[in-house]
Amino acid sequence: MSKPPSAAAMAMNAQTLKQHLNHPHTLLIDVREAVEFSGEHIPGAVSMPLSSFTPQALPLPGDRQIVFYCRTGNRSAQALTQCHQAGYSQFKHLHGGLEAWKAEGFPTVRNPEAPMSLIRQVQIVAGSLILAGVILGSWLSPTFYVLSGLVGAGLLFAGLTDTCALGMLLAKLPYNQPRPSRPISRSISL
Image (tube, rainbow, N blue to C red; front, side, top):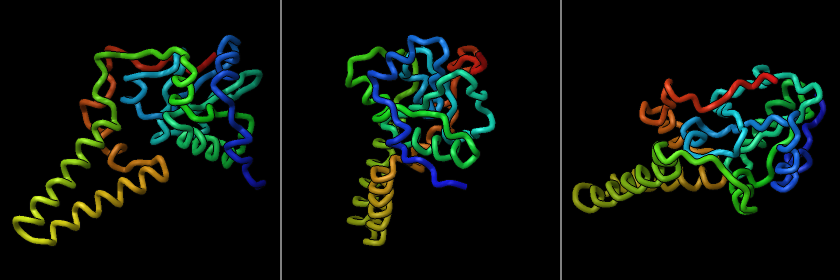
């Protein structure tokens, strides 16, 4: 199998994506978790979380332009890699993700009833565990400092890789699941 093209070579900037979205044959796929999608997404996007992503579930591109995006571009680059490994090389991704889209001032669909963002949930849980480790380490046993160190190492890894195990775990909690009566994605067949 040939070496996969770099994510940069398969990237599209926000302005180019905006122009492509005016074309009816562009399919925009959000690979963030469902709770992230339900909170805010680019208009017209469909949700296909990377945690359950399989390239074989994608419609064949044909004359369609398929573009992936996530919050920063790392997860969409991972989706591209999976697609290339499955033999699909014609997809693109939004360089800089939703953050780049919003930085250009382009619109998003926001749901004020959506659960708290995953990043805030991670910050609250991680901060609580670090604080608990420090307090318990000071009052009971220095061994509890290990808890703070492990959480700090996890946050460092998440920051470097843009993949957060705690965030993926929190995304599976019932209050972070989409409500069946209010679908968050549309069909991906054209």
